[in-house]
Length: 354
Image 1 (cartoon, rainbow, N blue to C red):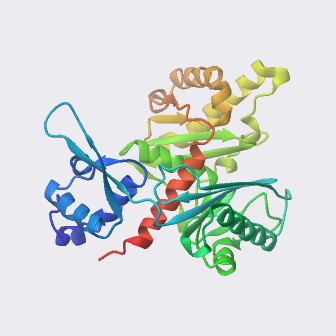
Image 2 (cartoon, rainbow, N blue to C red):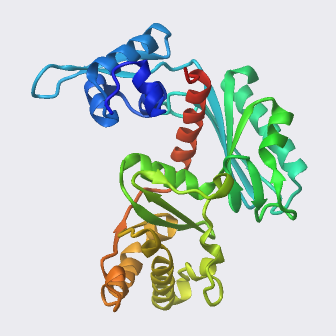
């Protein structure tokens, strides 16, 4: 259906105002291009963007000359109306930024702090609260300007409930971290698995694509999958964890290249990747594997051809049609994803369904 009024929006269950804003907080775009991307009429896009302009949520930017046809007016979300705090937790460290709703802008404030490798949830909540205060002071903003605080960490995370089922940072399990942080800070909070931040951005950059993704780095093995442009999640928004695969010695430690034996550990990593692909991709009839993350940044050109050869020579025709694609996204790709997830959440607070 190509809705051209609010009735069409209600029938499809899609809030196109939110979709427009989730495009415009990360890139400048024209009405014509959003018409194509969202599959609705130009008149409908014009109607919605006019309302957003009147409300001051978006603003007009430069005119784009496209070389054919009429020049196109670009739009973007208006800076300075809302902010998010974004915190990434790894064992022993807390990294934080304060970001404008318009994610094209650089971080307004940054923070790097050391943490104990294992701590209680109460200790973490206190540290996060102090980190948010420090970022606000650095940016010269009051706490009420922060609309969303997003926290990303390793382990079994339920994105819908904000419950941390297990995480190497905590000695205990089943922690309702979202509720604890919201009670302590008074800020709407979102909890994510770190790998989801990368997987979300991969899916957003390639709409309608289906893939499984392997993202090894910083001593962990991130995994994700996407079918027809939608990242996959389990019950209560549980992010898929590949570490449970029954691989000899553990699948996560197998993704490791050691300086004293590069050739041997490259081979072992390639074999582990091949095994993991065979266990996951054919389940959903997925034929594309995305390999990204720090380990593949450094050793992907050595590891991936070995794994691809193992796929190509498999006796099973469903395995042979799988192809690996190397995405050299850089070391801050997941961070960018976390910031954009926060702005998606701000969109949901700014625009309520009609």
